[in-house]
Length: 272
Image (cartoon, rainbow, N blue to C red; front, side):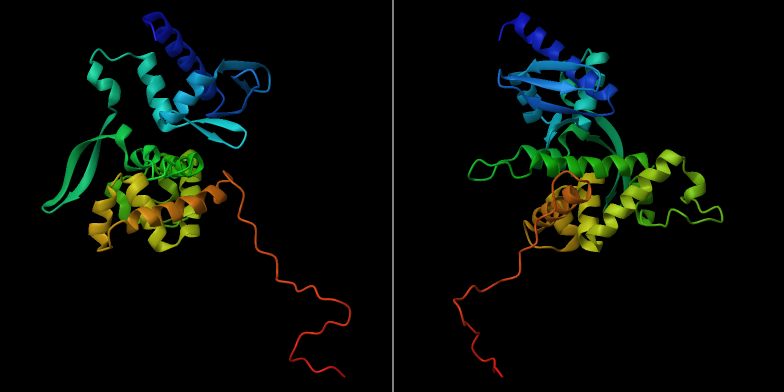
């Protein structure tokens, strides 16, 4: 692609990300027969090149769920960098934040590149058949629970109290009295999702999606066998996709019936 072409593609991407951000992060969308994506904000229709949209999905800036396109955390971060370009080219691939992590000698502040979160790495990983290991819906579920975690005002420093009832009173340090309505709603959504998962799966999701721990670190902390954290995470994310309405619940199998000819009776049943 030429320099002019790259500039045009970047302009299309910035326009798309801003459109989604103004709409609250997601819009109805579909790919037309002419190869262009069309988004509808209820007032107007907007079209974008298919190649650009598909590349943004592959890069993790967007997720496609049913008939929607949604902006991811990485997409919001990219938009912030496009609006405020950084003079350091290397920083374009970093979103550095300070995190508190547990070490052998206690807790320490470290710099973390949030654009390289464990969930993001799993999302771009392929299995031996070339199939994505996580679906877009599963990735979106992990991003959503992380967003609620952060909006609720939680952090590794107060991880021990993440399950504290939101209605606790008496001036509790992290009770409802200390939270805005926005943070309180986020905490309630978080607690509801974690309660659905149960203790083990909830802790796995918190460790990987919210505290950004690596799979091996989680397995080591819990003395789990290799690859178990990855399987537990995927199980939890699949449950969350149904909880968040990102995909339909699996259909229950119908009861087994036996069709017989006239006068058929199952063996072992006495007839009067």
